[in-house]
Length: 430
Image 1 (cartoon, rainbow, N blue to C red):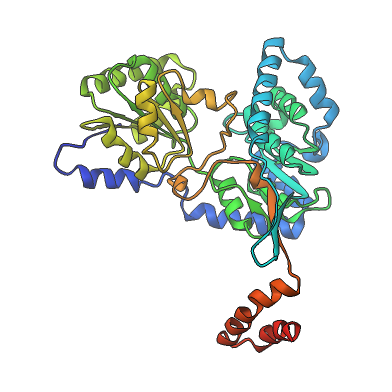
Image 2 (cartoon, helix red, strand yellow):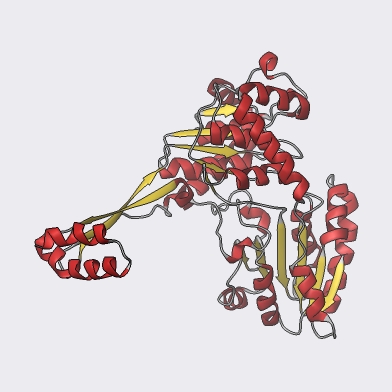
């Protein structure tokens, strides 16, 4: 764990190093992924079977390539009632939040009489990737499938690895709630390649979304352009801005909530109270040994964790903007949280006040938990309905509106040296 004090000499350079610290994969992953994609393009299902046997240690032909809707429905019915209710509550809130994101079509006439506008349509097919390696996440099933459903996607395909042939029943139950159309027991870069290029068994899709490991993220990067993607996501991260009025053990738990995802995850605390920072560190050291994910948290916190002491919490916000974190908690009184939030420019999702832990956003709050990492919140947003839709503009002119704007088009076409463009307009004007 690194500790910084904004008032000390050398802070700027040290903080620059923290901002520029890349915790993502090196070029070796890129070449490995390129080889996997090429193999899937060339050999299709045979390549998928081979990679699954090598990486997930089971035989697709013997165990089955897909998971049926009937099996998902049975898994849903077999859930403990409180877990089933929790999944349904999460689904209802996620569905409602994303329904409010649906864009509106536009159709209007301007002062010349020209008719202009845009119409939104869902993509025909979407592929969602759901991790199944280090951990299985039914919440990611809902966060990916439900926005696609709300958008009106006609075919939703889920890819999820089942290491050792074991299928997580809660993931299956979430798929039933979401209403997925196909589930394939395939993971890794090979799953992304199959979604992008298709095989004899698996028809290709138009958009691929969802989190995954470094190989999945790199595969999405490499197939972009063949299909759309939501983002290239890296290790998870949380930044907490907290004053000394918080309970140290609560803020410690907030920081560890992301540290337990992966050894490369990052947790950073900004505070204006050095004694409080010490108390949070002590609470972290107390909590880690008592949690089942202790080894992962220990590696993450020791290697990537950070404490930043600032003169005032307002001084923390420009520094947070430079980090552009996936998750930002403003653990202060409500009025101050709003005031700080008004100054935030770059964050994937922001959690306001002392009673709003980031972990609630991972499950039941409503906003999507698939968020930009690695400072990408500077230019991108979390998964939304619009990731499964595209906009088609349209234009209709009559003689009057063409006469009003056509001569300018002729002049510009001439300036660009495109006489056929000019002729196309000029002939109508005459």
